[in-house]
Image (cartoon, rainbow, N blue to C red; front, side):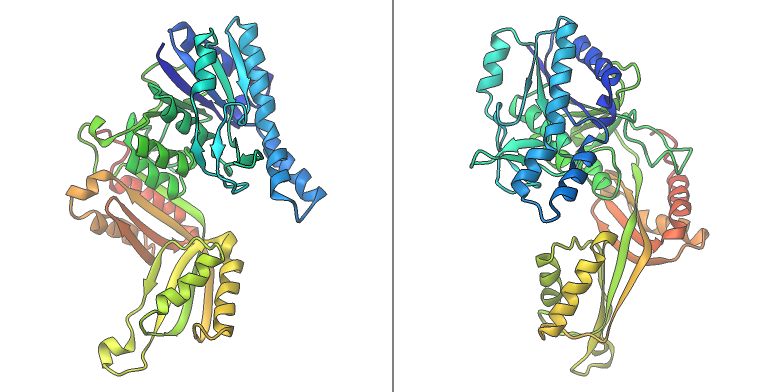
Length: 419
C-alpha cells in the first residue's frame, strides 16, 4: 500500500478532544487506502512541565536522565493516539523510539539520526497494522539509552521516517494553515503560499519563521521529501496547506517569496582590534568554542587601507542571539586576558532586530537590494548591518522599527499578490 507520514504538534494533541480530531484525519487517510506512520509531539505544555521538574530536582542534571524524563510526554501521546484509533476500528500500535528502533548518536538533548531500520514496522504492516503511531523527538543511543533530538525534534522525526520509508508525502499538522509571505500578526496583507521551494523554506525557518524546524527542512531537501504544512483545526483536502517541494515543481515564482524577522538579536562590536592575518580566527574561534551562534559579521575598513601605514586597527562587528550575549562577552574577555586578541572596548547593543527578504527569484533578478533599501529609507529606518546570500538579504535595525520594516517590505515587493 502507499504510505503517508503525518505529524501532529503539541497544540494539535493538547487534550483528548484534539487527539480525537487528529485521529479522525488519520482514519480518513487510511480509508483512502494509505498505510500511515503518525509522529506525535507531547501534549501542549507537557515538555515544559517535565523540564521544570528536572531543573527543580537537579539543577546540574545528568543529561541521560533528562532525556529519559522529557521524552516521556511523547510516549503518553502515542499511546493515547493508538487507543483512540483502535476505538475507531483502525488497526494501530504505538511505538517508542527504542522499539522502532530510531538509532541516534549519543549526544543527549541534541542527538542526530544514524539510521531507522524498516524491518519492525514493515513486518507489522504486513501483518495488518494500518497505523504506526511513533513518539517523536526521541531515539536510542548505541549504549541503549534514550536520547532526544532538541526542541522541535518531532518535525525532524517525521521527515526522517518519510525518507526512510519512501513515503508519498509528509504532512505536518500544526496550528496554522500553511506558510505565509510574512507573519499575519504583523501584516494583514500576508498571503498563504500554495508552494514554496525547500531553499526558501530553509532560509525562512533559519531567519525566524516558526512554522517548521530548520533541521527538518534540511533533511527534507537532502532526501527530496515533499512536505505539506496544514492546519489541524480545519477541514482539509489534497490541495490544502502549503507544499514545500523541489524548485522543479514550482512554476514561475515571484522574485521575493517572503519576509522573515527575528526580534531576539544582539549586535556586538570589538573596537580597535589589531588588523592582522589571523585576527578573525582569534575572535571567532573562542566564540565557536563557547557555543555562540554568530550570524552577521562586518569588519570595518582599517587605517592601513587608506593611510598605508603598519600597525593599523579595525572594528569587528557581529550579531548573535540575545540569550548568548553573556557567553559571547565572557569568551571575548577570556581571549583578551589570555593575550589572544586585544581591543579597546566591547560595545553591546541588545535592542536590535533582524529583518530579511527571501526568494529564489533573486538569482536571476537585479535590483532587489536597491528596492529593499529604498523601502526602508522611505520609512526612515536606519540599517546597522547587512548580510546577503544567493536568495536572501538580511538587515539589522533598531528593534522598535521591526514591524514597520516588515510591513514596508511586504508592500514594496507586493507579496499580497499571487504571481
